[in-house]
Length: 242
Image (cartoon, rainbow, N blue to C red; front, side):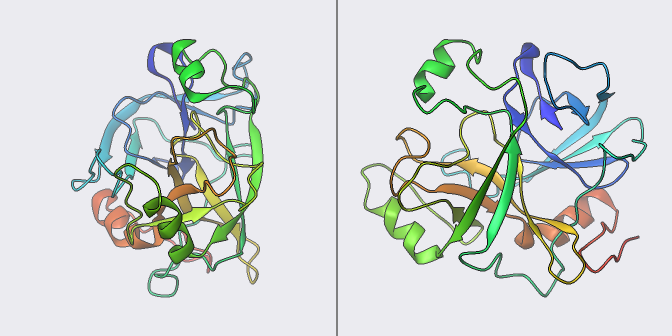
């Protein structure tokens, strides 16, 4: 799923059910599902948004509680290119994903390492990728991530509602245009993909810089909130759903 303000691609999300989408705290959303190349939307599924539920405690100053639910006006038919992702199991994964675990993120964000964030903004988002990109990233120790950001000048706060992923040496990362995309990890027992995180924010340096980790909303902290706001019990990795 993608968010498109004035037809400019800048974010992603994850389908939870035939009517609900999980994303970061975006206020303006248009939904396309099953899309690979933004220049060819013929086979993509477009859905009208009925409502957006932002987390009531979302803080734009530090991106704490950077999470939202999008309700679709028309239900989605599942297929080979349109499938829901699972949520973390409530009560079992409250600490979030284990450090060093590899997760997968997809998005249409900056993929050219020579393009800066400022250049993307000044270009009117034209430097974002047309084709869906994928990257595998390891989860970083929470203490290491906090120390990395606290050592920088600026007001950076990695809260307990967040986790970090990336490589110390840099090279691979999510970036501007990937916001709201799911950080998914495959459950070893069921082989189901679980949305453990959402792309949220990063440092002021170029994406993929050394010791600059991407910061993700820790979805396991919000399973109860998601079910309360939607009135729906979403599928988890143990195949429990309502």
